[in-house]
Image (cartoon, rainbow over all chains, first blue to last red; front, side, top):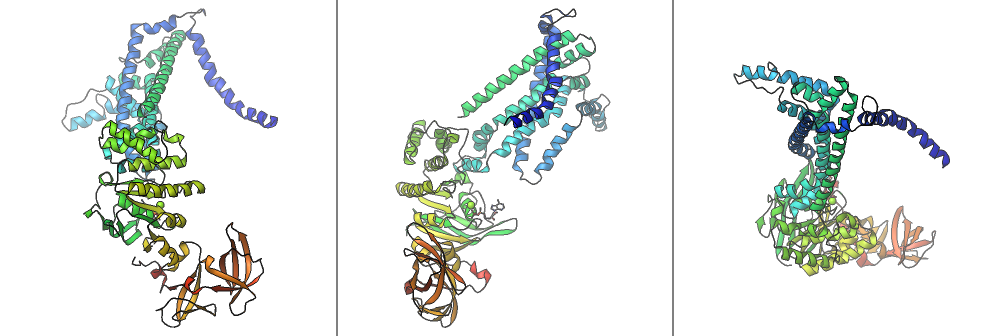
Length: 275
Length: 357
Ligand SMILES: Nc1ncnc2c1ncn2[C@@H]1O[C@H](COP(=O)(O)OP(=O)(O)O)[C@@H](O)[C@H]1O
Ligand SMILES: [Mg+2]
């Protein structure tokens, strides 16, 4: 007994040291920087800096765009997942691969691809011109950022929804039909409530990376549109004010945690309501 | 019999080019307890799904109360199904599960409440309204599935191996419950099982199926006592099926020994299949003119002993209250009316040929 326990402890050693080096230490450093000023004395200034109009506006815009992206992702992903789930075993894995494959490519690269498509003289406008249509001014607008977010994070919405949908026993759907429900009633009363957990984790998995991104907004939003991610990034890499950057990060972290707790509560409520 | 309610007219169905139901023709009467009985994969569920509207036959028609419903959607049919895996709605309470069909039909809340109470009482689960399906045992879930179906007052209840997942004791209790339920409701039951004992216990009519063909239709007594072919004889209960030669009317030769029987009309010196139930084999010691064998195996079964007697290379299955130890030399005899003679199938194909009910 003692021996196996010690063995088990030995096996967890790499994981524990990994966590220490790459999770705990950076986190402690952020808290250290966040609550001190340049002279190393304790201060709340870095935290309260979020109330600064520039920062607050960036956070507000981030929330807005992330929310919009989450909703668009949901609207696209749900029917897509239903189509995927409705296909039998055959061909399913191929399609799932098609959606996962882009996830293996660097976000930066993929977003740059969109940059060349949306540029003033980019691929999109070249095509539009060839068709004698009005060129579109999308790049450097919030719409381009939403597009980039949707494109990058759509798979994170599809997979959890797809996963709950395939797990729904076909005989449950047959039972609803058998009891008199038409296809639409079956969707509303059976399929949708049963897929709520997938929707919730999909929203979380899209909303959080969208909220913290700075790459997408930098490449597709130009320098004019500042999201909270860009503000923090600039504090670190341009202003070299690690104290302020850390302070803002802490606020963002708290924001995300609150958000997850709220979703958790909502998810529970949703289940209760359905009962 | 009472009025004809469902008629499956020459139904054929293939999956992936494989014929699953071949020209199946079956009539079901009002208020009848019909059981589709057959080995796994013989097409019972497919037949039920065609009646329920979840599959469309490639050929043939489904007539319900004089109307062709072959292409009618499941939600438009006046029948309900109890599915093999219960298929309860896990995101709803028991009360909401039962209310589902009534809510779809927009029944008033007071009516729904009464129906829930009535149905729960009927299946012996009063007070379970606020429980969730996950908190119920398999047997209880099955009862809820039945309650959920019957509140809609269907004219026919389809049940697909509803007791398959329950343990033996519960299964036997539920068999009586189902018979009681059917008598109380006064509706038609179409029941699917691969368990011959279940079929014999509960049904008015048993439909024995194999490989998409109906092998025999009849009352449980008829199916058991007068199987029409070797498949039915073999599938219903244990039996000894041996080669014989019908020497003349009322006389069959088995392993060179003449046995008097009651069957006539097979002609002279005709090869036949002979079916003898294990409980009908009579063993005697110190006999000489009977078929001679030796007890090779014995198990105590409670009510009787089950023995294997090897005679001329064939292992006879024998059930008797008298015990003969292994190694005992015995003579085998059978009362004439317990010998069932059947024509041999002309070919493998014919064995599965449809036989008129
Ligand atoms: N949807 C389907 N697709 C392909 N084959 C099927 C389908 N449904 C049933 N089958 C096949 O049809 C045969 C009969 O199935 P089924 O009616 O379920 O038999 P039973 O209920 O008597 O066990 C089986 O071989 C099964 O594999
Ligand atoms: Mg089946």
